Length: 225
Ligand code: ADP
Ligand code: MG
Image 1: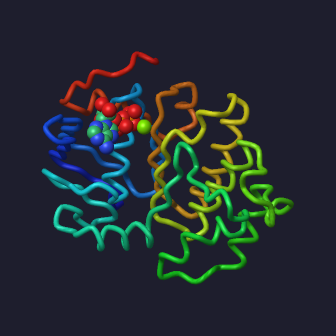
Image 2: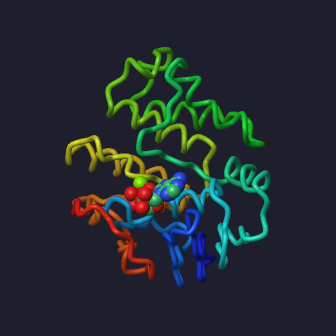
């Protein structure tokens, strides 16, 4: 089976401050992986590298078999739009747009047409039908989170990157949300890399890894967990 994510000697610094130095790491296609580490350990930085928001400085990163080391930022943006669904910690929904408009937004940047059957399936199974015309600011946190998941899933991405999107929910809601998300990902063989400081959810994943164990840079982190 092909690896969806692969990195070798991947290093990243903000200015002169090193944050990541990861020797070897692979995620197989279709695997649902949990990467944990305390606040400040570099989780968001790593996801931003894989999403192509940050550029590789040293070493190699391959996403879906494509090496990112030589790609320019325009190429990375297009690759992200076509293949990667990103679920942000704060959801990054556009406040003045409706739920439908938020859901359709990523399609404007990708080469894909709207798949109406997929839209309907996501909206129905994530319970968003009653809210489609509402402004996202009128929704509860749990509803906003489901909009963020549907938005990331709509283009049927090969990879989902999730940055602590459950931290605002209580355990039962977190578990329900993850079950729904994984249901779609397993059906589509989508690879998931989910980062969080919250290890109570790790048993729901295929595999769980400590970022600090992978990383040779020992960051001064906040001792949250
Ligand atoms: P996590 O997501 O695990 O909390 P981050 O990747 O956000 O960790 O941050 C890792 C380290 O990099 C922290 O020390 C943080 O302060 C620093 N950092 C994050 N973003 C920037 C930035 N844009 N510029 C400089 N330092 C940053
Ligand atoms: Mg973070």
